[in-house]
Length: 227
Image (cartoon, rainbow, N blue to C red):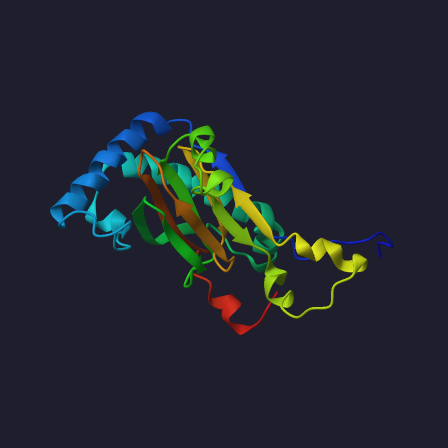
């Protein structure tokens, strides 16, 4: 047994740039604004589509993006699960996107703290947003303008908790991702997160998704106990 300090149950997050994002994002912006217009336009400062985006649109830009998404989800999942997959004989694995949708926000629109159900991995892809330097100059929102904030697993322990210099590390309870066009963030679906208020020249447009990964025989063996 190791006698060194061990950090248990780390939280995996993958932040990755889609190299072909320029042309793909331009097509996605046109597609999404067309859908919004067909449904009566924006009503308020946040628009969220239904989560059957990939069923509604068989668009080449979406297919290209979700090829990248699929590889990225497998990258982080395999990094964490490969020894367990081998032990339980998972066989050939398949990723299923069980929900995908786009969201448009501006004029201080935000999405409050939440997590995602019915999936093991979730992600957010930034289609359009003002450059970071321009966002930081906002007189009210400043550096928080449009960021995605993730919250520590220990967040619920901080309310009324005893604090002294011995557990100062618990005060570091958030992780902020500064959005950039073409960037994908993959994270465990249980992880609490929030889209902070955004105000900019461009609308903040994202795609969110939920994914499951199953082996050749499904995931039946996992229903009967932890491994």
